[in-house]
Image (tube, rainbow, N blue to C red; front, side, top):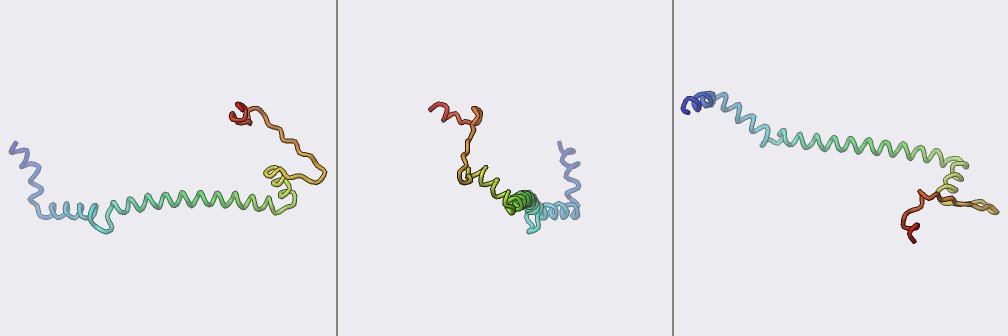
Length: 108
């Protein structure tokens, strides 16, 4: 048992090894620019990059919708499909299929 302890504790007698270990522990855990802090900041940056990409995609969708609504036909299409609007003297028939009807309506 004594040989085992001497074998592994011998490098700790060197001043430079002890100083290097202490410096590494200080830089990893206690310093203001520690590895733990950088890891958290990198996670935050990745999350923000993902959010940035999401909003860029949403902006593309909105630009497409704006272009569609800039024409008279596009406005009429959206009004008819979304809000069920109609022209005067025109009738609208809404066809619902069985799979599109919710179960609550079916039970009532």
